[in-house]
Length: 322
Image (cartoon, rainbow, N blue to C red):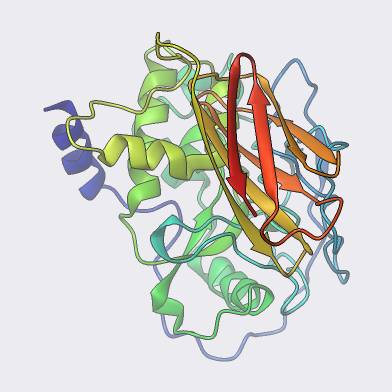
């Protein structure tokens, strides 16, 4: 089966960051803030809301807006030869736990390598071994990883985490920008590696644009990984919608960090606006990704616990209890 062949291929690959080691104290080296430029909307954008990025020496924005952020990724010029500054200790909070966790969007929204565009993929990511030519040295990333773990409040051994490129190098992710690197739980290979490999293959085969692949990985790689690992699956359904009647499912999880709800929505209605409403008339909207998933940041208008919410996208409607 294709999925079996894919996973075998993934097992033979390394992760998107160097392996961990028992690093000693962090040596003092010069640091410089990552330089970047916003990618034009016509080039690429994510469908996931991204809070304003933290600035060196500062903290990420404490609240999360549900309607005002465009979610544009940025090109980065951060040097591979300089230890980059990380967010303040304890200021970042992962979404979920374990192998299927995702980084805090305020700290790690993702960033891009300006050398990789749709016009250059045949000279960059589609060339076997190219990523090794742009990977930062371990002498740099080990120090960054230690500080990044502190930012995320990770107290385990360094070997229990992979210093992961959120938008992977093989999809044109920034090589050494702290907005694109975070301590991903578990060693490589892991479920995210399979998604990265599948998306790169589709981009290089001309089945998927580079911008779309970057958007998919940054929006919610977890949904694609679960589809890929499902029994009988051949590949994640990127960029296509099932041909069936409109339907959806809805769950909600309270986030004490941000004092609002993560409303997890799934439907067979990709790339459409979904609106969540409660009994008090409060509503928040976002849009589904290429697989029909959306994570709507919802601030209830009244006494939330136990209240009912309703989500609508296209002709699909579903409800859940907070």
